[in-house]
Image (cartoon, rainbow, N blue to C red; front, top):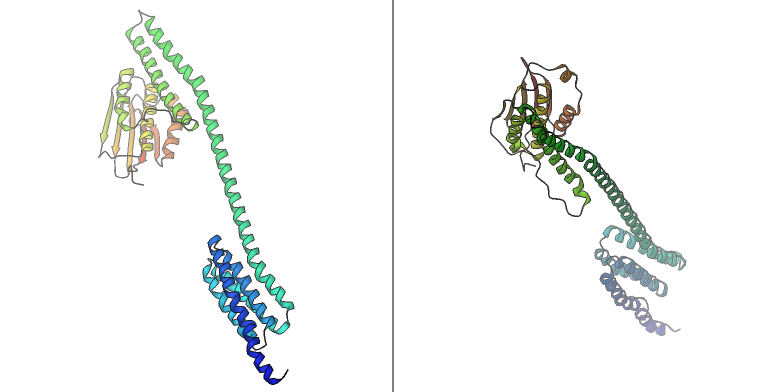
Length: 368
């Protein structure tokens, strides 16, 4: 070809070669990227890198040596904005840079490297995304398995509570009911019985009925988690019911029983109030059992940090049976006190009688 023809054909070749092809690839690339942004936010990373790389490779292969560096720079410049269109800025930037550098090797090593660069640019993000998806699926399976195990444990506990409730109702509650019925029947069928005996039978019947009421309340607590609708039950006893408890003891045992309250009364945690009530209840029962007829003093003292509960019977002294007792009453008191973070002391009172002392933390209602 003549020099004049070569010069005339040069601009046409340059314009119809790499730059024109690169410009025509731009709208096509941007259209696919926009579609990826609408369909799924992560697609621009894969689509942009692949299209930018292939367009640059196409330009590099088919253009003049002078145009190749410009084509690669234009391809890189057109692809870099994709970094900011994805949430994974650092991986996107690294992938685009790597792909562009591998494409640039074509300038030195030829078209053979082009295929490798294209495959790497296309598959690396896809493989990374697949690994992330598998990791997320594995974490989701682990979470579901933990939830199933927790649910299974809850169902097992509910089933066990239901079984205990049935046993208590069928055995213990039945026997307590029979005690109440037999005590009332003995009192009514013995007209010549002394007043003292009739009074004690009446106390046995009243105590059995009270125990049966408490048993039913406990059964309601055990069964409430095994039913769709929790049963309606009486509120658990607290310090406000202490006066009723003292009156019942005084009427049943015909003993002088006093309730002394000191300090400023403050609202307490329901668990602390229930513990204090049960301590007094158990201490009164033990006093009636081991020191019948002895006067009993119940003292409740409020301090800023502690609730002090003190029950003392003014008996002749601790009996041998009480000294050696390892019954469940005292054990139950210790467990209740320990559960709320308190302290318990039981033993002979100074002078005579028996003393039960407990110190319970005064957790203000609504403080936590």
